[in-house]
Image (cartoon, rainbow, N blue to C red; front, side, top):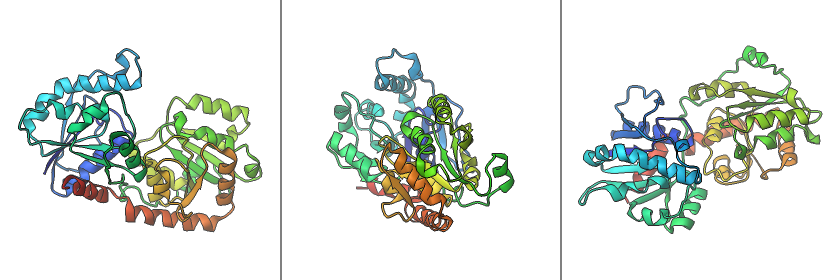
Length: 371
């Protein structure tokens, strides 16, 4: 089939949705499909390893340049500015399917000429609902979601039950690696310390404030633990101030964002992945990537995270949302039990291999498009 993905941000910056688009595009191309990606003028293009994926970019007006009438208004306006330039190209290409990743793009089916064979699918990764999106969604032919939790959110809003395709992980790139002891030592982490690693956007809803507070809780006071925070974001200054006020600055390592392809090397330095989100994450690709690298993980019991980690304490531990003491207890449990970390890490890798590869995600997507 001839399939196109449309998301103005895909060629502008990296995030969970953008990663899903690129990885699914590569998986579908490997399965013999003709794939095109539409995005805004930007500099983001991952290594496609020689795959013949067409990339079409067009001008758009960044959301920050529109009047501040709300985040959703700005995102919708940004998309409309892109539609203006890309519409003729999409219409003339006459694709079999066009995959949309945000409700803001539901305008696309309404722009197609009478008799167009192109059908549209919404691949949900969150809940960017806005006034009027239910009406716009009537011309979307198929709905899929990245977790059962996200499917419930979509069904509750649009009254249409989507298929669940799950996000995936590039298990060839994200895999257990050999620890670079010298590099870990340069970070200031000793052999007897347990290193907890987070990678992602350092924004409030990722819950890193909870992890910082956990370091000051009684269960961790006499245990040698360090926290590695990899990433950038507007919450970083506040975390630095909080760490200083709690007198735990010496237990935290702040690392600027690194290229996505380098994350496996950073995870190899760590003992445990830590993801104490306080918001309804639809899936949690960064969690799955850490698990694929053989790390046991601690995550919040919220959104789609339990579907990734599992509820059985086989691949990692789940803790209540926004509870520093509960998080500290989970960290203490793993810090004092090397064998448990080893068993959970091995199981985490197996769980990703069995359930969350991009090939599996692509196959599930195609199954839903054929219904």
